[in-house]
Length: 611
Image (cartoon, rainbow, N blue to C red; front, side, top):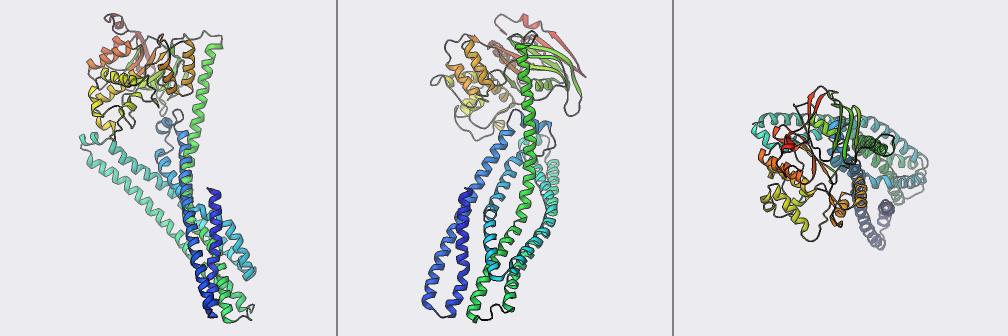
């Protein structure tokens, strides 16, 4: 596209030059009253104008296509960094130096590419036009013409540089406030019902208007600074038109063209004026781009700042992953006794603090989470229950100690069910199989039957009719349609669907490799089409108060189903009735203190329950 744009722009400049010298030829044919020459010249002029219009249209078309491709490439590149590991989580939760990452990716990239594409044609052709018309100007006016025009451009560039500097920083501030203002409206949209229960319309109106006023104040300041830049640009544009005639007047008044007739002199002045004016116009276009360049510079700063942060977080995540793999290898090759095969996590003297404040939550915790030994985490608010799950999930880092992950995260190994479930856009099937990317049915409607069965087990039979089927693309927001209890029921239906099955030892090893390579869908397909299922491999489920919106009876039924499906649970909860579904209770007292006790209630479960 770039080379095509260059070719089209060069052809356009050749045609423009021919169109530009036509007025001088009109002076000649009209001055000589040459009617035949007038008709021929008019036909040529009309043809050149049509060709020029076509080339200009193609020029704009190619620039627009370049804008789309630039935006696609840059946005997908940022997405690849943004969604790597848990970088997006760290950026939104643990980092405060990057404001509105979503706006930078969605809006700033769009504006950056749009503005850059609008300059592309002028920047591509400028070196060629400047060289050619400098030569033509020198041929017409001598050395004085090009030197005067170049000096004029240098002065204009220096003045605009001084006027542009304060605009860039102010533009960056404006974009930040734009993002804050948009985020406030999004906050109201997401939390419309709680705000309405609080009767918070007046206070939110005041807060939203406050953000608007801050934004408009910055925009006024930006417009004030841009005023002086526009004055400079327009002044140099109009002075340039006078300068062209001054350059031509010097050889005329010095007698260089004293032997020409008035008609010939008019034609010469017209031709030379076009050359000089066009050369000045080329420089003026570059000066006119000052306002666009300031916008591009502002967006470049914001996008570049985001890119640097994403790459930094990505390298940090990759380093942590390498360390985790090294720990895994040590289990197999070091002199220490390897952890048992059924172990999911091994915590050794782990100390945990809040990243932002450094508040001590847990100190010297040693714990082995293994198959069949479900753990319930209890404690008062702020003692670190969810924080411990964040460390297990790799979202936070422990202050001291080591945490070894001996199974894989994701659909085939460990699944976390947060207190507030996450639902993506799409059909009901996509909500159940999430986070699998694709569906690999056993045969025909076998996968549909599994999903329907798990929806029934979770008590969501009517949801299938409300959604219009498993694959009906709905345009609603699932958070607006489902009640809190239904959200948590649907999360358990998802959990039931993701249970893993393995055929044999070799197949199991191959599946684990595929999991670590991130191809969960392929792993799932191999699970389903494997021959001769030998049994169930433990599936670890981490529940962060995932049943807080359910009744105790429904909660018990869901927990019983999880245990019957062979899952090992790590639960955060407050209800004592949940203790019978767990083997161990980890009680957090705060300030680093904790207590691990064996739960005797599980032994007294009725036969067939909880196994």
